[in-house]
Length: 410
Ligand code: DOR
Image (tube, rainbow, N blue to C red):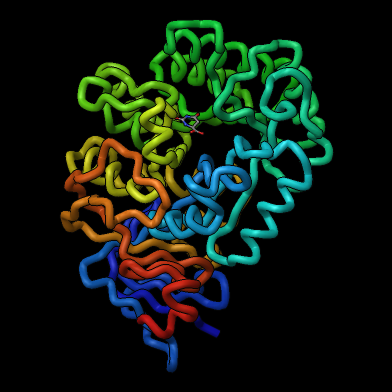
């Protein structure tokens, strides 16, 4: 049984580029090629000059649920994700209560399943209440989480981090540090010192390590050295660190925006494959909290447009490389059957338009629009997001509230 045909699109993934059609079955891609015939009764999305990429997978988002529904909740976050072209999101544990117990992880998973919009993969806390004092219930959390992180805070205590790495290795889960020592005033050094320590702990314990939001050339240099030694490590950079410099935008985010020199090094790291993943660090905040200095950018909806506009259009990064960082590598890290437009893989695709648009207040489906890109003219707007053959976002409308069945809107 076929579920959807996408016709006459420019298909781009990490491995290839062609013009053709994509036929999706009950859940997986059935065929990719030129001139596929339209099976009777199967809805068709017409390419009409659009590009089709594998849907994006975000390893790093904050949906603030439980605890801060005025900023975001699991439903508004999922709607924003679908709007941004993401079908899978991994959620950070700095909620209230923190995701440091099986109960909170189960709440997130059950709520996401009930909504049935995007796939959700919780990250468990390393320490209880993210206080950096004692380990969270890592054994209890392990069945529900793929990784452990105290995102928002680095774990300063070396012995505690060593114990966390040993435990994560025994449980077969990834350690996902927020690399920043609290007692070091130079932000670059603060990151580099913690990257160095955590790489060493990885070497000592054999745990898998995924480093959050690297923003310094020195951090990437250390990652390159460790990869050269064959350590089981990956790292990510955010769209804002890749495209905005502190000379250009004055905006509070953690880690701070890089200067132009550092930003160039991050782009080069992505081009050369030292950077594995582009992760949004979607961090919604109310205007009041931003005014009080809360760090973060509401980034999941503009991730692709800003990367496309500032890196692909000027020829700094090929679209295929972007696709690797936004889809293939994060899917591989999560162990998903996704990330390429290929027969047998999940039918998760995104259709994007190479037309200019303005990212004004009305653009956002997130509850928060805290971004220095408000009002910017960009290209690469997402037109449709498809999850396992089901259209979950199309031309401004999201499945659930705006339509029940994609057949009604095609
Ligand atoms: O800017 C940030 N905001 N960086 C983080 O690491 C945490 C995040 C948040 O939760 O607001």
